[in-house]
Image (cartoon, rainbow, N blue to C red; front, top):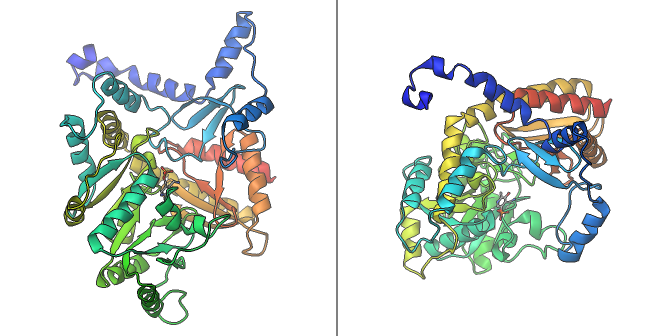
Length: 472
Ligand code: PMP
């Protein structure tokens, strides 16, 4: 109360710093381990741990094997806090593989916002309520003035599906141009626009109204000559193919950093040129920011800013609710107007008061805790550490990405060939050292480093020394 009544009085808050430092230290200790130690000291019996094999068997008696399960010896998670996850055996894992708990697992401010609203009001967009206005205003303030309408849904897949519907309604066309290795969602449309899926196992191939453009590498321009994989003539040919199939292009969709390709950044010049090309031919540009949005890239709040372009439609998801299922599509007023001439848009849960409170708390925490700045600083530090590692270990190829959205290629010594086996061994070795890292890319040989944005330099040091240990 003293501090609340006298916020200017620094003396009253003098003991706060060591307390918050201690709490930060504590979250790196597994509560299960602490409980085991305390129970032992108090001569209480240990709490039995279920057999993993039996749990796995149980899981497959309820769930389809279409789901995957990480690690040969899967982990039973019991809790999480900020950048740590806790299993049932007393391990505290450093989580670099989960970009959904964006501001930190179970961030108390986000949890409290959800709990408070949930205990008071939860309803749908057919009523007026303040939470949706307050959140929409804050969310749209992060975009340029032209992007001024928002639709709320519950998953990135529902958002990309809706983005394509909006583009098709607005243009009256059907064709969609997509990026090689892109992934946008699990709906029928989502699979059709995801090269990563339709060209992969049981994918069924590319539909007639879809065209895939090769992923441009850094420094590549549309108009800079024949040696480029993708030039304006090729794009014009693509449009011809579209027309010949009786479909004209409604939209081009891509992520600014193609995640499933192994975090490949699309060159800014290329993005500017392709955006202009698409517009010239009457199509709309869609930026999928499910992975790159909300400050993860550090210098830019949205990934398209890095390329110096402004999309017509933006797809949001994953980090938006820090784990609470919420997603959105942001677009220009004219596109929203075209859509409003058709059927009613309704999503039972999209934009409900609880989700809006949670989304607003996420935005507030990103700002209050300077998380985008932290992503930049710690991301730059991780890149510098890998550059040093690269000098000693020839298995590290390209290091790419921005902020806390990084990809590190694992290659065969003395060649640019992917080394999938080594990448798999590294992931396993890191798990044995309580660090969770994933791989991505068509050869599954690119380390995907996307920790919660509260990740620290000390955490980065922990990662690098564990990698050294595994490689040694
Ligand atoms: N777009 C991108 C870029 C994604 O990475 C994902 C999920 N991995 C989606 C869309 C789909 O989101 P969700 O899983 O929430 O449906």
